[in-house]
Amino acid sequence: MTTVGIIGAGHIGSTLAKGFAKNGYDVVIANSRGPETLTDLVASIGDRARARAATAQDAAEAGDIVVVTVPLKAIGEIPVAPLAGKTVLDTNNYYFERDGRIADLDEKKTTTSQMLQEHLRESTVVKAFNHIMAADILTDGSPAGTEDRRALATSSDSDEAVALVTRIYDEFGFDTVNVGPLSESWRVERDQPAYVVRQNAAELKQNLARAER
Image 1: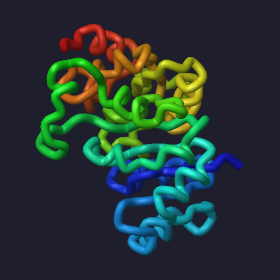
Image 2: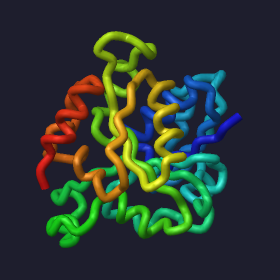
Image 3: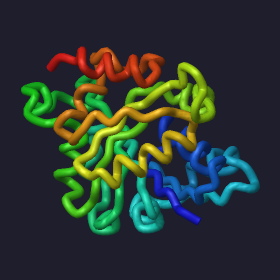
Image 4: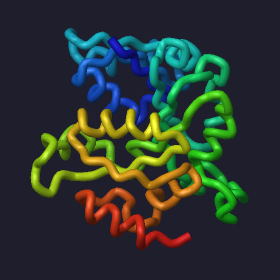
């Protein structure tokens, strides 16, 4: 049984916890306020799901793969050592209203996923689930081969990580479009044509090509 550690229990993290559990994964989820605040969420995942609340350190240690879904301003608090050698799914986007101004992002010198990769130097970061509304994650999926199936983008410096996210997307009911390395992940972030709109694979590729930086 594969265990998914989820660091961050906001809308995306909570929804992914339910989705991963439904798809047969064990889930260990953490937030910044402590495991005791996640009792209702864990209960809502269902009696048959093997889910538990934990600290961020415990979620990082327990996860075979780990989702980081905290505000960008908090990525410096993500534990480093227990994530060494692991694939880390990054759902983040840059919201200066929430995160404060970050010069390297404003000046287009880096991307949010590259920032997380810089923090987690011994991990493999891959962009995932960042350009879909949380409410759509468990409702917009459809079986492989469905006409006009919704597609989501991923980005990583690792082909293996892209393959992993491609499999996970398919389990959630989505096609995959690979954006390329983390340096290109800006194409699917806030204010770009591909951001939080429903699109099939062909449309997503077109929107990625239309992105401007």
